Image (cartoon, rainbow, N blue to C red; front, top):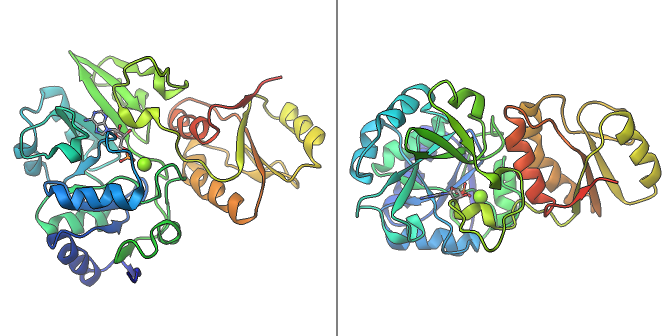
Length: 331
Ligand code: AMP
Ligand code: MG
């Protein structure tokens, strides 16, 4: 199959919608990362997403809508708290879990009785959903396990020959996937940290952060968000999070500089370092791209100065620690 990349326009969005209406899959930009989209209500279309990505069948997909009315047939009820959060954070990088109706096929929800729903802010994503006329299941448009794509070029690297069309909407503004939350009585539980932070959500209710956000999953424990148990975001390079800051991290590099390695620093540390970014927002935008670029440069090892975990930093750390397979240098 020939894979075309077309800049986002009314025409390319029409083309994408046509493919989707015929049960096909296309890649679309969103403000978080690029998504691999199919009609969320069409079992066969959704199955092609799993095939193209090589994604485990029990890892459910997020269903994307473009207006609030679209959620109604998908879920049994929208709690008042969810309605308030939708009003404040939708469209945007927040995914909420609801009890699902039979409209959602089992493949989309990974066999769970619940469904994850998000309204993206990206104009391109919304245009494609609107033109299609149905909600889109859209996980990240990378091969399962690889770093998520934040440019159309990244999608092409992973999906060339597997899908007919990639809509190019430029670089993703947030750069890491959405915050996934569920409701636990009147509490909000963060299953996956993202661009909408615990601090922002705590204005509305008590917030609990699932252990999976920072630590390795325990194989004996039931995981509420199946996606958090898989190896993720891994480049070919061997990634380590280094629990040393500033001068300590500089010294660390001195001791390892003969290696074929990159040293990602949380700021401009000058030659010998690759600047990961001063703020969590910048680090989120750069993380996946840097991991892919390290592979293009045949870098063997990537050492990353442990970033600050507050705000969006928790999402950065969550992706980074998974990319590192939970390997931390702490000597
Ligand atoms: P991705 O599509 O790659 O952004 O991953 C979607 C994330 O949302 C994964 O971590 C899933 O486990 C999580 N997710 C999707 N649906 C549900 C659900 N019904 N309950 C809990 N987590 C979900
Ligand atoms: Mg993904």
